[in-house]
Length: 171
Image 1 (cartoon, rainbow, N blue to C red):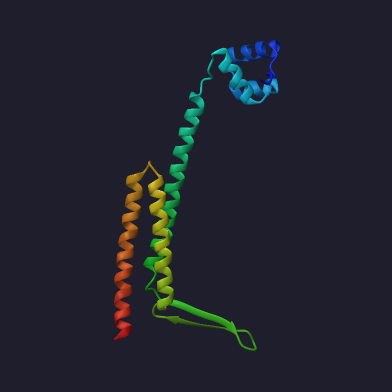
Image 2: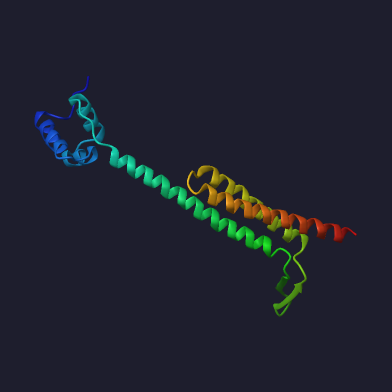
């Protein structure tokens, strides 16, 4: 069995640092030892480190991540909703070209079908991502569900407009 890198003096120092309330990692830093060595020493001494601060930090970090997911979901929802709201707005097409590299533009009454399809697909991807974000979040669930409901209503309205336009274009 390998010998511990802790001699009697190091053990005494470790015990004094422990009694002073230092963490395992801080004791390891001060004694220039691996934290695992301090863990084995403490186990052998029958003592345990207070991990409540670490537990609280992990919980706080988890809450922060959940809040960040909800913020991201709100931003994604806003972008997707804006795209869906503008799907039937006038659509500017333009190009640069010709010998003189002229700029030409034309304002269409509404976006071409391919552009509308792209908007609906993009919003659908955002909806899918939002659903995953909400599934991972255990905080702000009601708020997130409200965001998803709004997006779902936008999808329904966009799909209705898309069906109407497709039917009109086919006639």
